Image 1 (cartoon, rainbow, N blue to C red):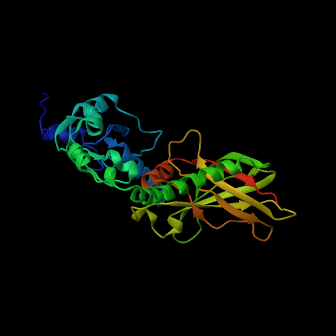
Image 2: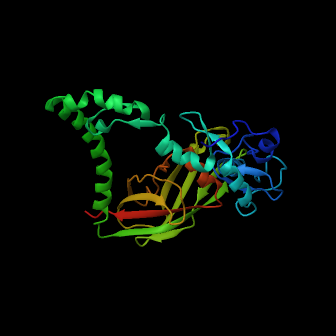
Image 3: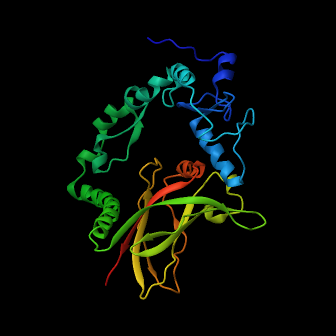
Amino acid sequence: ALSLPRVLSPSWAAVLRSLVLSRLPSHTVSPVCTNGHLMCAGCFIHLLADARLKEEQATCPNCRCEISKSLCCRNLAVEKAVSELPAECGFCLRQFPRSLLERHQKEECQDRVTQCKYKRIGCPWHGPFHELTVHEAACAHPTKTGNELMEILDEMDQSHRKEMQLYNSIFSLLSFEKIGYTEVQFRPYRTDDFITRLYYETPRFTVLSQTWVLKARVNDSERNPNLSCRRTLSFQLLLKSKVTAPLECSFLLLKGPYDDVRISPVIYHFVFTNESNETDYVPLPIIDSVECNKLLAAKNINLRLFLFQIQK
């Protein structure tokens, strides 16, 4: 059996901990500043995002030297050392080397949360893996009548239909005659207010023989988004060229080809005219605030815009 110390010596903990959270990183140590101080990847992204919101240069929390994605580098020796240090399983509370922890939690831990094999017919049970066999032997769902199961399956189908409706709508749009897409780059700017606010705007671009601009804002331009744990981005599409007739379009934003941010596709619809040439601000459907911080930490935000012209 693997024997590991439950507590690190104070000297090792002080050397290898993340200086932002004052504890050992749970995953790979990503950057070190130019003076060699460590930060975990999540802390690093959060520092860069906060600095962007406050219009400040991000600095190392230990020595205050400037940090950025180009200035910081990885320390592979430290990453290897941290991967072998003990970390606590969130289910059984036993200690394992960080390099083995993920496999243990997903495949081996007897206390990991699992689901009943009858979840496909509506069983909502979640519980520790070591109780799974006992639960499934006593689970009532296999003995339900056909009518009872039909009611459960109808509810599950309603949720599934909503997901399928989105993808069917996208497939339908792809059959349109006039479709355009382009890579767009949102660049950060500040408003001219006494208390400036961060916003993003793309250079003008041409799609469907028209000129467009995209704008984006953080937390709907609230006063101090850097003080909020919940962060969102919203955007609007502006038609910059003149049209001779109303231009009815559907559009959606997806992640760019070289970004790892997770965006759920949402289709928006608008009729552009010379008098009404900009949409309302609509949510950029980012999964969570962590993904939003990834975008804010980047020098620019690179996404892909799809436009579908609706012809009567």
